[in-house]
Image (cartoon, rainbow, N blue to C red; front, side, top):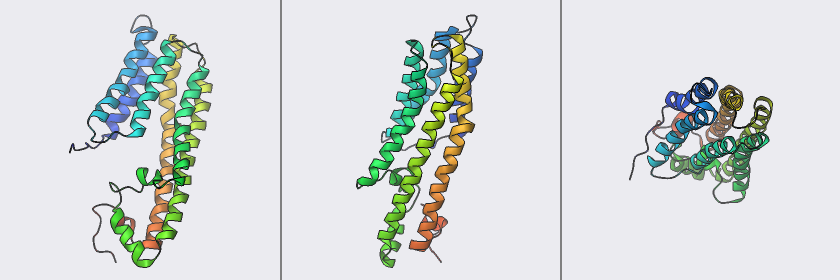
Length: 234
């Protein structure tokens, strides 16, 4: 079975945000790559990285595929010179679809919170379940998991709303122009501090909520519940 390599956050930040933004804003003039060339070169970095990551994984991630689709849609909007309103719709639609999927998953046997937060890679699920069964609190914990799912869904809806607002506010020039590339680069840069970081904090809040539930209902601290954590709880 293929081993999944650990991601390098700094490298991902450079390839997916910094380098494409610099190319779009500084090298899309006619004396450089041009509007179309600059867009293609800029998108090649996150597209190439995303493809490399997918090929290096033993299991294809739905979110990773969605990320690649998002990049391709951005390229299509620029190359086909569609109305920039479609960019705002696309920017909002991707996280909104994920948010809907998270909420719909609460009606299935496999809520997405178990994939994104409460998963065997991060949490020693078997150990937590053993303690829950011993205490008779498994049903209460499932209710907490559902609440965490709603919290997780709200993260993606926040991202969708902010993406639409930023794209509408920043990208106003016709697609296929140098100005469009510059604005797209600015949008990419601003999306990290204004959307990605707040969303990350919201996800950490959901994880903290689960950690409290684990401590109260399973009697395990977060350190003890984590995979590779202390095997001798107090």
